[in-house]
Length: 77
Image: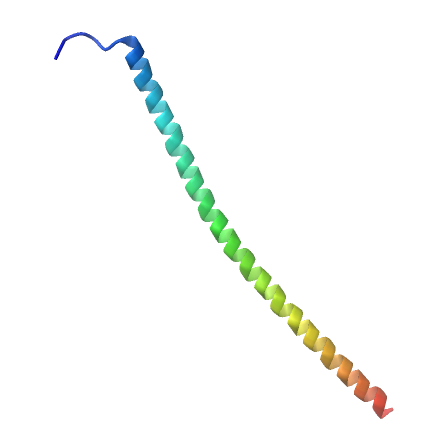
């Protein structure tokens, strides 16, 4: 090995590479947590939609039952 010092431009280049690596690592970490949040939110959205759809059919059943009862009462009168 030679005892020549590393050129200034090479040191600057290495510093820039380290900064770039730190930025990429931070972006990957943010992206990972965002995708986890998005998956959780989508699953929650599915559950809420399914419960609303089930509630809709309960209301349809109640309206049919009340209409049938009303018709029976009106017929009895």
